[in-house]
Image (cartoon, rainbow, N blue to C red; front, side):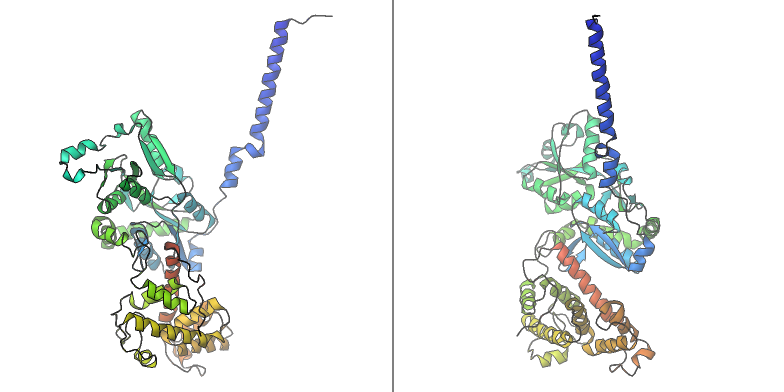
Length: 504
């Protein structure tokens, strides 16, 4: 028997092992389950095809924002914020309704954008190369640096300026080995990674995911729970007026562009928004909006961190308890009723309209007499009468409009303009073959038409001319604001449906 040279046998064995390993590796890399490109395509589906022509046809622009003291918040019932004010101007100029969706999770916001749940992502969003691969950015509306947020010593008020400066980090070189908390998915994490390379030492980046936002991390620094985080300079300076024990003066980046994001396959929307941004930035209104939130910092933080703010508090108005009692008596979501009260009086119990309507719910002289109101400017009396009138309207429409959600719109419109004009629109809808139990594009359409002689002189019409746009807009504004209240505030467990059910 021929003997095999042991060195040759060993070489053959090693060669076989190497070939088997290469083949297995190639099989693994080509298998569908381990193909990175395939996984990305499965996890990141193509964005929906929904450009500005379809947005205009739908009649609404949907923006996803986060609840912050600069971007979007609700103060005493009124939506506010730098991003919100710009978005509202944009929607008004484009003749569409603005709808707001809220999340602090940046990754979720990107998903909402590409899935079609939102059309614009209006965060204080830094333009980066990585993000530009996923979304299209508008023209920048501002430029800002990123800064380190750090806490001053406990005795900082008694320290001289140079003594205080010596306790704070002013050189990025001193960040080596420091733990810095950052919002997951933010540009701050990417900047800190790059900064680690630039300074030749590791910065310990602790990313916080989910609904953690920048301002909650700033608050944790102020409370001493963490030592450092990062924010855009304008946001940091705003929060420093509310938390005077934090410092927001150490830059960690050059100025960066802040812009809105949209789907990459929506060129019409991008061109439309860009053209609008160019015009608004050239107008005095832009500076007014910017200064309101970033220049007048103390007044802005008083609003944003008020007990009546969705950022710093839990109340919508000084009359929440009274509104909740009234809503409970009608099995009505109290936030919907709060939206109605805001629409009527902006929560001012002394409000009086040019037509003589009075108080929180703007009672007319007829209602004041009918419901035996002694003092219409007394919040309790005014709310009681308003609830009685709403209950009567619910009974009036309950037999005519079976669907509770649709009936709500008839009730709201009637509260504004009277049930007679709305009933005229119902009759016109019946006459012209529309669905008289549906509000949008049916009864609402004919209420608007009651400004035209051929409609308000129609034989079926009893109450004549009506500025029908006003009650139609009234209904839309109340429901839209209600949606924002629900989004920004936690509902404390009262009836969650938005339907009226009359009490005994």
